[in-house]
Length: 310
Image (cartoon, rainbow, N blue to C red; front, side, top):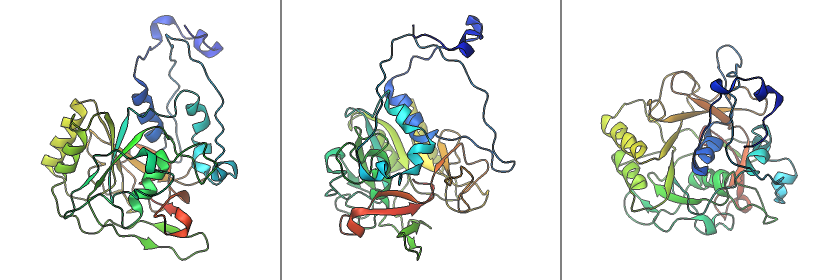
């Protein structure tokens, strides 16, 4: 039993909770449940829950040598205290995160070694190659190579990314000197949403524990929700961007009860002006001025971006 803190010692044994969860579960929480806030009345945090750990935990300070991290350009990793999370895990190659987005840049040096071979497209025909950059931006936040003295550090650099292309993508550039982008919408999507979800969760893919969905619509689809529930039944955590509407109109799939809807905050941990808020948002994460990977032939392969996807 790990030694408990003074605060834990003040909690009666019968009131303590013991969690025995695999590392992928904690990884999913680290990726999504980064900051908790109520948007209407400032911020409020849940009361602490005492956790007793039934196995020894060996911790090691993790300080990536990636230049952007060392320079402080990845502020999101600081305010979410990722260095502490990395003491427990930096991901596992046996864990797959399915990314339902615009595809991925297979040649990006930060991502090439982390791409699952079963990536596919549901938009027309062909491979899941990213022609827009949005999917590659999201993939970099999750799994950019750590400790390679290059670029950025990903949150879980040891996991595999399963790229599932559902749109050619559409972004609107913000004209400033930081090459920042704000994602308005993802353009034409010509498929049933449930198909890529079922593909991602199919046990034949092997190892998919998290599905990250980066599209949003105001229309509820019972078939889509059913596919998500099937994924949950197979032990897959489903996460979705809450949307960049700036209002409190719920967007789907983030607003389904079975999905973790993620909104965005800025460096001061306040709601980003573009972030959807309200009932469709379960958690929030840094989403303003996020430095990540983009297409290899654009800005040297890196770009700042805004959005609830990041």
